[in-house]
Every structure is written in C-alpha cells, then in structure tokens.
Length: 129
Length: 206
Image 1 (cartoon, chains in turn green, purple):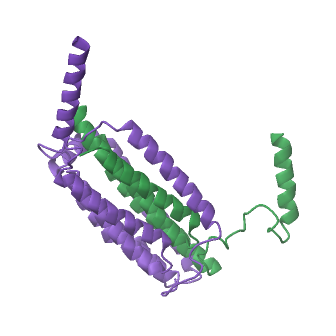
Image 2 (image 1 turned 60 degrees about the vertical axis):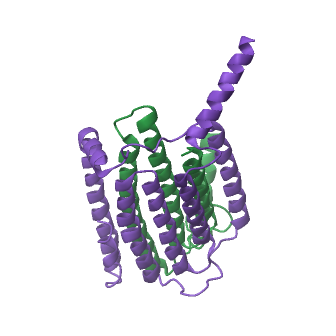
Image 3 (image 1 turned 45 degrees about the vertical axis):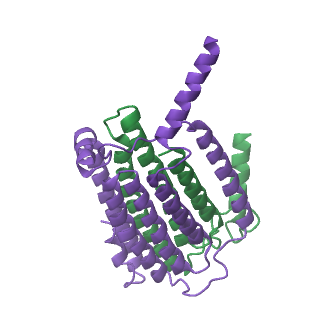
C-alpha cells in the first residue's frame, strides 16, 4: 500500500478536528473534535509503525505502543474533561464556551475587578516592555 | 550509449517497482482503504458540521469504527480491537452521557457553531493543504509492505509492550489512577450543591 493513503487520511482527519475545535460552541462537541485529532495521530503512528517494522526492521514497535498510550490518555482526558464540563454546567447552567468569558481580556470584562484587571495588564505590559 | 542503457534499465526498474507495488493498478487493500477512508472522512465532516448534537456523537461512532477498519487493513489488529473497545465502547457512551447531563437540545440547535466559523474553515483548509502537500511530497515513493506475518498481531504487540515498554506502561496505569481520583474529586465538590448527576460518568473509561 502506498504510504500516502494513510498519511493523507490522517491529515484530513486532523484538519477536520481542527475545524471542529475552532468552530464549535458546545464544550462537548469540542471534546469530540479533540478525539478526532487524537485519532488522526493514532492512524499516523500505526501506519508508520507498520512501514518501519518492514522497511527499517524496527522491532520495538514504538508506534503501536505509543498508539496504545495515546488511546489510554485520550480516555483519561475525556473523563476529566467531561467532569470539568459537568461541573461548569452545574455552576453556570451552560456548557457554551462562548459564554464562559470571565477570564477574557478586553472590553467585555465588567464588574468590580475590571480596573484591577486592566491595572494588572498595564503592569504586565510595562514589565515586558 | 551506456547512458542510454542505464536510463533504460532505470526506467525498467521503476516500472517493475511500480508494478510490483501496484501504484497504477491499486491492490484490493488500497481500494478498501480508500473506500473506508472516504466513509471515515465523511463521517468526521458530518460530526463537526451537524447541528444536532446527539447525531454528532453517533457519527463519531462511524468515524471511529472506520478508523478501526483502517487499522485492520494496516494489519494492526490489536490496536483495532482496542479502538473498538475503548473509543466506540466507552468514549462515545461517555460523550452521550455528557450530552444528556448538560441538557443538550435533542433537535436542531441553531447555535451549535460559533461566529468564527469562517476563520476556522480558513485555518483548517490551509492546514490541510499544507499538510497534504508536505506529506505527499515527502512519501511519494514509499510503500508499505503488507505481506507476510502481521506487524501488529496481539502476540507481537504484547511482546514489544511487555519487553520494551514496561516502565511507560506502569507509569500510564498511575496516570489512569490519577485521572480517576481527579474525576472523583471534581464531581464530589459539585455534589454538595447538586447531589444526583455526574455519578455514572466517572466510572466509564476505566
């Protein structure tokens, strides 16, 4: 099999996940898109492992071991991520990430800590300048 | 004279190599990979574009299952079954639980996509074009040899995992334990205000 097939498919899936992460508004849909990106990486790892195990006689099977690790980490990530999303939903009543702008900078921040925030920002700008 | 002969032999060798690898007449594996890949990519596209949230999770099942078939076609059978077990079996169920517990709308939700959709589309298309260009250019003349014993059978994977990768494997189990404890802590804090929901979601991936 030509190596370009799995590589191109993995690139396409990764960019689909990238679009989903950037364009979706619901936090759980963002998590789904992250899963797509992780799966694209897994496909790349498996394809290159199968190629290298023949072409370079690589016997460590590092690609497949890394794929298993990535799958496990993805499961842990989705568990923690959903727990966070559920906690946010319970506290705020929404899982819409466009509405969770408490730590956002810019003109939309209002309330008592606005001045402190801008002061801190100015301080930081001075420190970096 | 010798130059022409060398060119002729080079030409012959490239044509035989192409025939042996089946670049112009793709093998059955390549056709199957291409078809399943199209289905997978289409399901992924529907996942990130549909306005019905539950349908997105169900199309994700199609995409992940298609990827499991791709692993099988790449002779990585253990990874394929792990993919089916963990992704299709538990991650999607967990996502559906999350959708239900956050009271996601069942029908069409008009605000599933945020306002920066066109910027996201531009970024994704540019990234895809760049990645595909680089990857195709880099691996133009590379073929995977799928004949012979499977590169990813359960025996091979297990041997490499427990001979060469034991320490990362055990470290990963500690990480899973930490994730479990973290999920419990996160949902216990919220449980003081709202006692009931969130209980089934932490048990699922373990």
